[in-house]
Amino acid sequence: MNEKTRKVYIDYNATTPLRSEVKAVMTDGMEIFGNASSMHGTGRAARAGVEQARTAVASLIGAGDGTVVFTSGGSESNNTVFQTMRLLAKDNTRNEFIISAIEHPCVLNSALSLKNEGFKVTVLPVDEYGKLKIDELKKALNDKTLFVSVMAANNEIGTVQDIKEITAIVKKAGAFMHIDAVQAVGKIPLNAKETGADYLTVSAHKIYGPKGVGALYIKKDAPLFPLIHGGHQENGLRAGTYNSPAIMGFGKAAEIAAGEVEKYGRDISFLRDRLRGGLLEKVPNIKINGHPTDILPNTLNVSFPGAEGESILLSMDMQSIEASTGSACASGSLEPSHVLMATGIEPELAHGSIRFSLGWGITREDIDYIIETVPPIIARLRAMSTLNV
Ligand SMILES: Cc1ncc(COP(=O)(O)O)c(C=O)c1O
Image (cartoon, rainbow, N blue to C red):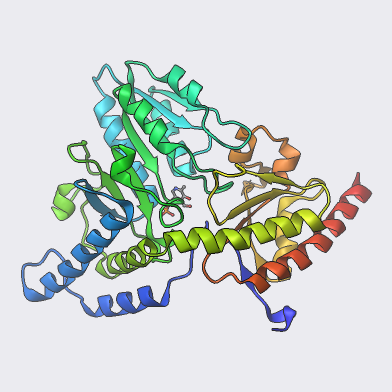
């Protein structure tokens, strides 16, 4: 392929393309127009698709005898759990909350809203690789702790937590445990029931399913209050007419992902390691972020000192390489990534960091194109930044 026409989307932690099999199921699903709560045949046909999807999602995450509730995505699943805990915390001697410093904004901001209401929220530190400091968790837990939320794998640096060990510690202390597994599901083996957690969040659009649909796993007998009130859908746990085509697509994506986790780990990490090796060889003075071994197979977060993240992104985009930066551009001021800052790196390094997140569709040629294209971009930006000093 002419390099000018090559386009490399390498931002799969942000979202994934729909798989063709998923699209086909959704297209058929749109013809099955019935309301999945209707009693007649047209409704029952839609309901059958929804229940088939539930079985597939339950199987992918190892739900066992737990419940899988469909939601509008990871953000809603996480918010539902926090809202449940908020209600439980009222007039309860257990009313304190614990999260990690590197959670997704939908967890961080849910916790912040509790703090603003007057609840005690402890934010646990992580080490230089993004691993939760277990000793700090043990210190923070007490007989007032109601709830702990820790992600299975981080979206920016890919670090995978020892989630079973963390859950065991939390459960021993008598608190509820929630795992945001949005980035882990489909990428690494994970079994919700085996973790022992009370709640686990998953999202379809990270596993080649549609956007705007996700699920919440609830351990048998764990409490849940609806965030969205209305009809009796999902046994009263989540009201609203079923988005049945999207749910059916989610089911198909889950079914495929369940059969591919091992292959994903092998094939995608091979390409990721090739990218890491190539960049380390061709770009002097770079830093790889995240844990060296306990890391998602698809994630590579690199700091390029002397170059600024947004400039790197724009330059890469001009060469049709689509990645992302941990930095968020908020109201005109560039905030360094809270995840990278929590690992203790310098703000300048955090500003010059790029997340490459791979997925099905990335080829060896794509990786080689990045390895060829990025070094001159960094050299040029570094030269400019030296001129500007
Ligand atoms: C770790 C994590 N949690 C939650 C979410 C939110 O999921 P959704 O986009 O389905 O709302 C994301 C999405 O980026 C994520 O990476």
